[in-house]
Length: 276
Image (cartoon, rainbow, N blue to C red):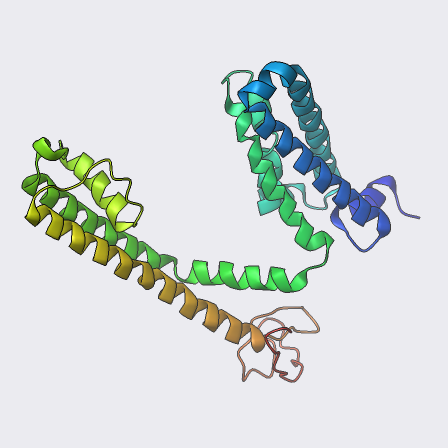
């Protein structure tokens, strides 16, 4: 017979029972309700008329989520592993702002981070294909982190050069009062945002601005190509992925016949299509 702890672990962390699905659906409704309450409280008119009710709702949801977080730690087989996981960290961060607001006024509006908890909808509705796509994207970002870091450093150098040139060419008389402010203009221009609060007035400055704009469009294509190539590679590797029936290890080489961890014979390779 299941103990109370085992029963609640199955409900909270599982979705293969009506009780587990109902728990997650109610949790998502509560998360959305708490986020809406925080957003409405930021509207001055609603805050003046219903501020007390919204403040009470905020504390109600915070206490509810605090209790839920404690129960998750209690029923988890590995509490520390859950606490360090993505959802564990999000669950903790989603309750801290309300308590922090007792010391730092206004920090309670950070509670909108609770919206991240709605990602559980993929697990509740069993949208496994979406999770597979998310895993591919995450894997691609991890594999390209060094390339992206080098690329961002190069962009930073280009921005400094453009900003310095504009400071020399335009100067304080045209709004470029310092190199940091000129770098701000370069960032806004290269990212194609273009606030327009600073603009070059001289022909040479406008030429430099034109080059910066063209550079911005060229820069956009570089990380897109890097990440896209890695996503394609990740998709290809997942198509050949096999699981050892003995130790359940993944990520074997396409031509491997035996598991690299336990030595057990691997199942025959079967190609998966894009939809599994």
